[in-house]
Structure formats: structure tokens, C-alpha cells
Image (cartoon, rainbow, N blue to C red; front, side):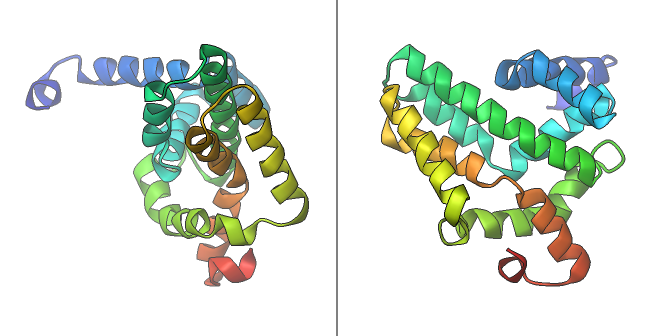
Length: 180
């Protein structure tokens, strides 16, 4: 850490590592789609990636997917579905201020609400959202994904809309469960 902080190419090294991690996790296409669809810069997309990765605790999800014994087709499907869910969260974060607001500020402002929604996702989901979650779990299981890893990826997808709800709760000073 000390060597990086004092390195004359510190910004370039960090940018390269971040770009590599983003492409490894969501692919080459999603960042450019977000630039086009959201009218954002690549820097803003990278900021949204950093914030989403932290807000939705994706590092343990990816580690679990990579470490579990399963057919490689199932692993690839899990990674694709996780990337798709992450892309949705990134788009929400871009609308919530990524690029204008530092990722650390977004995490600080939205983290509590997103965490509350994450903890209570089972009771907040209903109707079509619950059916969609069950379909995703079934698709992943049919491909040979272990139940735990399928549930982790489905949980990330289940949190679609959490950024907007957390932001609205913060701005309106209302509890997240009441808004949900």
C-alpha cells in the first residue's frame, strides 16, 4: 500500500486494476452500454461499479462462485447472471449520482438502506418479483449450480430497485420497509 501511495504512476496503476476488475466481472459490453444508455462517462461507470460492488457485497459472491465445485457451464451462467444484476444496480447508481458523487459518498449515503433491504429481501418480495426470483433459482439449479451459489446470485438480482428505495428513504426521512 505504501509503495502504491507514493508511486508516480499511482493513478494509472489504480485505473488499470479497476478497469481489469470491471471487465473481468461484467464484461466488455456492459460498461459501454451504460455509457450510451445513461449518458455517463466511463469514469462514472467505473465509479458506479466500485459503489455497487461494495453496496451489494459482491466480492464474497464471486469468491463463492469461483471456489464451488460445479460444471463450468453452471459457473459461467452464475457469473453472467451476477453481472447482469450488477449492471442493473450500476445503472441505478448512475442515476443516483455516480460520477458526480464519489463512490465512498454513495456507499455512505445508501449503504444503510441497501443493507436493510438486503436483510429483509425475503419478506419484501412478493408477487411477480418472487416468481422471477424462483425462476432464476430454478434456471441456475437446472444448469448444475449449487443451491448456495444460486441463492447468492438470485439475492443480488432480487435487490433490483434497492438503490432507488434507499435514496428515497434517505431523502424523505422515511423507513425503508415502509417505502418498500
